[in-house]
Amino acid sequence: MTRYRTVMKSEIRSFTLSHLIIYFISISLSLWAYFKLLREMRIRNEIQQKLLLNETVLQKQNKEFALLNEEYKKQNAELVVAKTMAEESDKLKTSFIQNISHEIRTPMNSIIGFSELIEDPDLPIDKRHRFVDIIINSTRQLLAIVNNILTISSLDKKQEVLANDRVNVDNLLEDLLMVFKQKAINSNTKLVKTESSAPGNSEIITDRTKLNQILNNLINNAIKFTPNGIVEFGYTVTGAELEFFVKDNGIGIRKEHQSVIFERFRQADLSISKKYGGNGLGLAISKEFVEMLGGKIWVESLFGKGATFKFSLPFKRIFNEINLYF
Image 1 (cartoon, rainbow, N blue to C red):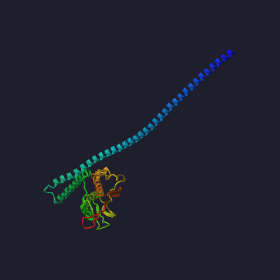
Image 2: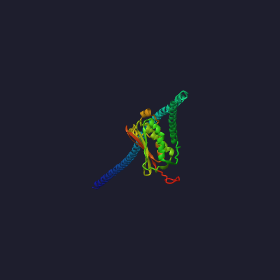
Image 3: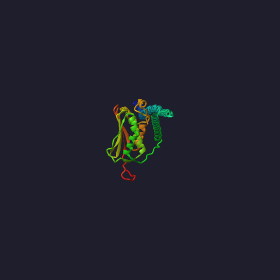
Image 4: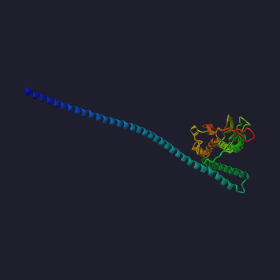
């Protein structure tokens, strides 16, 4: 019996130890599996965080690339426009050079040709006078071309300065009427100076030379493009401004060309320069002079019905005999 008890105790101890070993092994395996799972979860979280970070970086880079792409598209579009404008400018300059060559050669040939003709001692006096008139007109035409080219050059170099002259506008318009009277008669055009709505109130302070050249260009164009028609010019007082106008019932200007005729070397279309002449500088110079004087210039026209060119200037009125104005 005693031996049996001893054996049983031994077996119980052996069984208990085995279970303890198994238990500890199970605990160890469980802990190992738990820590392995924790490690895998930590690695997975780190990977997910890196993926999220990479995704955020990629999204940011995509936005930056999209912005750059838009910027490149915009720059490309601007380059295309600039290229088109440069090509158009080259065409206009080429056309201008061709036109100006013709405009210079024509009066030069007239001057040379008729100067040779008047050397004939047997030339009748009436023909001699007519040839002299042609030479004088050709010289004036040539001088106008040279003046336009010099003026454009001066404007480009910002060398034009404003003068503050005391100008009687009514007298200036009367002088222009006399200057263009014969030209209007030659083209069978009726030239009319419209009286101001505010007579006796026409003395202002402005640059006489520039105002005269602006009106000269506009009236000259109106007569040129209005054979057998009517040209009217004048001004009105509108508050603190003088509004000048030159109106004709000539060929008019198409709507699509009205926005470009004030650009340099531009005319309404190429056929005009061939038929009527001109170098495309007069209106460009007029526009720049008007803006220098603090005003603006525009055109109202219906094709085939005529055109009205208008420009406004500040009304710097003289109010006493001293050279003061406001």
